[in-house]
Amino acid sequence: MPTHTLHFRLYSTVASLPDNWDTLAVSNIFLSKAYLSVLEQSAPENLTPHFIGLFKEDMLCGIALAQYINLSDVNTLGQRERGFCVKEYLFKKFSSKVLVLGNNMLTGQNAYLLDKGVDEVAALVQFEKALYALKKHYRKQCIYINLITVKDFNESEYPDFDAAGYTGYYKFCTQPNMVFNRRYDWENMDDYLAALGTKYRTQYNRARKKAAGIEKKQLNCDEIKRYGTIIQELYLTVAGNASFNTFHLPVDHFYTFKKLLGDNFRFYGYFLDGKMVGFNTLIKNGADMDTYFLGYDASIQKEKMLYLNMLYDMAAYSINKQFNHIIYGRSAMEIKSSVGAQAEPVYGLIKHTTPLINRSMEWLFNYFDPKVAWNERSPFKAEVPVSV
Image 1 (cartoon, rainbow, N blue to C red):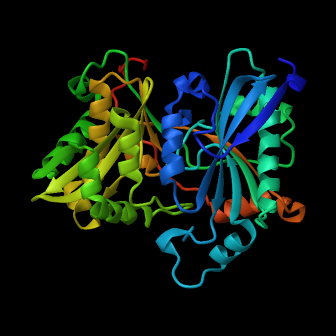
Image 2: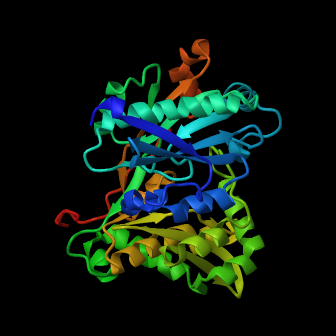
Image 3: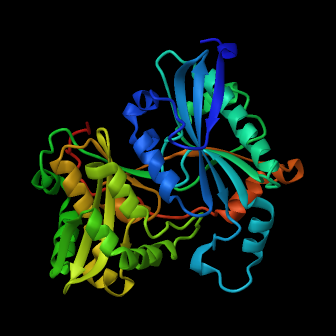
């Protein structure tokens, strides 16, 4: 498809999106109107979504998500840094206004989808133009964008960005996406357990024994709303210990998610003596199952091995329901690999809008987001067959 026939349109509300938007979003729930409505109604306070339609003449042939993120009021470096922090000060002063092509709340390529036959390079040219149009939009409001970034893509996709003229960007790779691949002959959790090596089957049995007394329950909309305060406390316990934060979810986020996505969003509460002590969430996305945010009571997490049990529960549901992949996302790579997830590198592009600062982007990026050392585990027997 020739480049000159493509053009973009920006949308700020889901109601204004073209009627046939979901026809293109059918392969990724995270670009559907239902999910975009969650962002519109219950995004973090410092995040504003923007929607991009790509057209050939008047025919919609591509869709994309962009986000403006204001990091000024977020404790970006988490609870590791107390009091005045030079690193935090410098980050917020020079890099707090960010435009993202993609979804900062998820891991993976949830940035755009194209209709069959649309030239990828030509589309990427238009998406970058859309980012700069948004930059101009914010400048009119006296908001000056510091960083423009694209996330997340695979190594094989990078040449398309290069061919599209994404010059001056620093290509980065942070923590990998941890993906659990269901083996083709696994029909239930017993098949998974039979494939584990002795050490990791022992780990599974020990974790399940430790969880004695914990009751797991799927919550509906009303129940999520009723437990809203404790859910937020449990979520913030985990989010506050993260090494790098760019947002905090509002209290009504999970309720809104359940209300708009229904059975495609599953919320599980964990209870001990009638008190909620943890939760996890799953999102059905075609043949894949995406894990979402979770939370737990730090005072019982270690004793009950609650986090590890949640990972097993996510795997069990996904295997029993025959999902091909579980997207465990970033963070806690070692423990996720111990249940069978494998590291898949994901890449991004980032550019500072001040040329002098942009020249040092590689050094700055590694200063603010240092590498995390971890040991990848191999829990399965050598003879386990390949995945689906």
